[in-house]
Amino acid sequence: MRILVTGASGFIGSAVIRELIENGHETIGLVRSQEAAERLTSIGAMAIRGSVEDTALLRKAADKADAVIHTAFFHKFSHAGLSTRLRIALGGAPRQASTRFMAAAIHMEQRAIETFGAALSAKQGALVIAMPTMTLTARRLAREEDDGDPYSVGGGRVASEKALLIQAEKGIRASIVRLPPIVYGEGDQGGLLPSLIKIARSKKKSVFIEKGANRWPSVHRLDAARLFRLAVEQGTPGSRFHAIADEGIPFADIAEWIGLESGLPIQSIKADQAADHFGWLSSFAAADNPVSSTLTSERLGWKVKHPGLLDEIKKGYYFGK
Image (tube, rainbow, N blue to C red; front, side, top):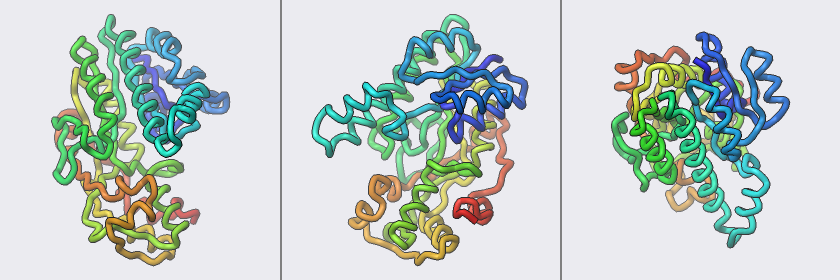
């Protein structure tokens, strides 16, 4: 297949590109910079420079593809275009800027999904989007058939999941790959694990909230990339898959590993101290998000091949060793 990948220079998107090429697919990557475009062409992919905000560009690129894997999302303010940044900055009270930013990111995601759906509908192509597992109901083991929960920590993006399912109703092989809060592997710089390490170093301690019994799932980026390939090859309309290796690691264990590798004290804090310590990450650090991938394995034959999170942490590269 000829497959368009958005976010192709990102930590996950770049792994997806390599996975597709290694399995015989013709691959087109959407990237923002010339440097990123050159990296893609050096490994045998085609590159298109542009932004996911440019729906005309997305439509043109998708018209020439058999399938689309959409991994792009505005995780940073700098990812948005100038006009979007100005609307966010000047659109109201400064303390509400983060809320406006997330609303803009979700709006962009929905427009991209609708644009790809329109391009792929005539040829009944495949559309796979990335979605966080933190859109699922907390404090119980989430399964693939579960709908997104608008009241979850990541509930704002449930609207994007619904937009994708509308495309499935049109006959497109539209499916979702849900990713855990920790997608790890060498080269990880902007994920939640590096963010936790940075906070621990800044605060000179690695902490968990209360007993730290809340759970975070995880997966190696290369295992996640393989699942995206299987989903675009085999996914059926409306299917949902979970890229999960560890169903749920107690947050206290994650804090302990960070503390031991960083040489920092490890301690519990009260729930009302979380915002001061974790900042924007506090609601995620408190979230209980256990997730199963049993049905994904049964339906696609997807199996974990790479080391677990603790073994990966022990390699030292997250800590500059």
